[in-house]
Image 1 (cartoon, one colour):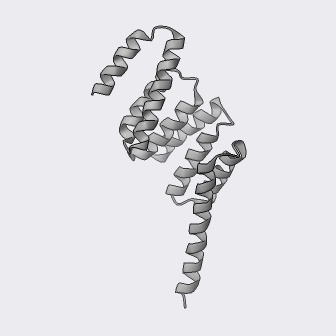
Image 2: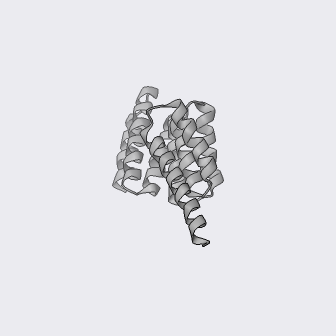
Image 3: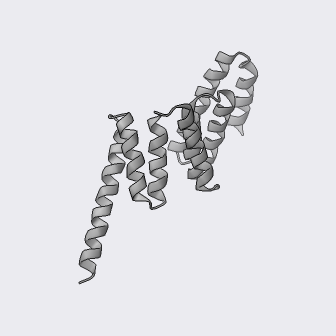
Length: 153
């Protein structure tokens, strides 16, 4: 509740476009903080506010899609809709492909997950999180294959 009051107060003062963009950035930063602290519902509110204030920032759509998925309150299609919008605004936005990869991984589609994560990595070769996820998926996949081979004996 306190967070909402702060936002309302800042919104009143953000009458110029530049101020709105600054406030949108702040909302996005707050959203990231909430996601890091496992509060996706609060994060989602911040990201949606960021989009409202600055609807041309592709990154805000990507983060909204990821937060929406993390809440578990909506279907994958809606989350993917935000990711598609992010990529429509910025086709080379690595974080959108990264989030899409994470969603595919969580949904059990490892092949597509690797595709999206590799795309994120091709756009940003220093994307350590994407590298780590690809490695994890491949290790889990190998472990699963070996488990199937040796459990049939």
